[in-house]
Image (cartoon, rainbow, N blue to C red; front, top):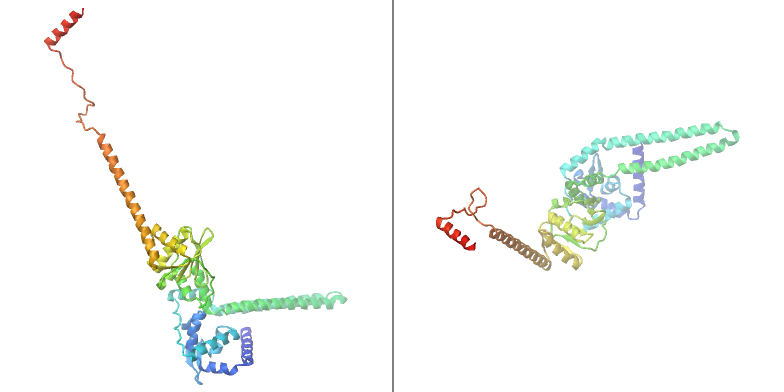
Length: 415
């Protein structure tokens, strides 16, 4: 009952705002002539609307109707009642869409349908929480319980006031009523916030689900989150260097860099900020890598991520010294990329050739050194026959008779 009354009151407020608008005739024309399929397609790009949830039909007066469950809403009611947008925001959207239609601008196709696997996982998670109807049932029960508690507290305070001294009964009763009014006002504010959270469009709920999953490193969820990112997402201005390519495969959008000690944080629009030691070094915006730091480590990490995301041919933008340093780092780190800029590619090739030449010289020197050591060892080795008895020595000889006589004569002369 509470839900029906609040919805009715909201509808009356919206109708009052529309009726008070000075351009009632303009919006009557828009509601009658605006192509609902065009509106849904544009909303899918600007607000992440899931177009496949809705069907477009034609009413008896020829105006479009968008089927939302068992309701068939015109384009104006769809924005205010289904998407829960304010009338001022709805009016701007209707005017813009109708202006594009009457100007003959072609409408872009809606965003692709959500990933079947992730969408099923999201729906299962919602069901595990009891579904939307169950959540509303719990909400209304909680509201009744809290309101009843306030009323019981008021009755208790009033009884205590009546039981008090005669001269203080009136003031005590007044205090009890004021306390109740203040508590009731606070409770009403809390309930408004709670109901607004329950009215969050399914597309926003899906985006929140994807964000939480992407934060765990799920590449598919990151790619899906980026696909659903709202047009015109506000991003911080960055004037440093960047790495990009002419085109990248859609699946590359979900790649995470897994460098050692590297941490990442995912934004709701799908941007991923990588940091090392608490220092942000790279912001991956899907189609472009923004270099938040340009030291050697950050550049090498950016190049390796770019190679995985964009392939071998990449484009640099930013300060000249950053681009030249990146070309040198690519050669020194051996990252297999080619720069579209011919001057930078020439620098990379020249540096790579210098390094290759240095490596070749070092290899040659090592080989010459090994050859020299081998030759030295060979020259010191004496090749002798081995008898297994140790070193050989001259065999003793036996003197002949003539040698004995000569020796004896020498000894006699010496005497």
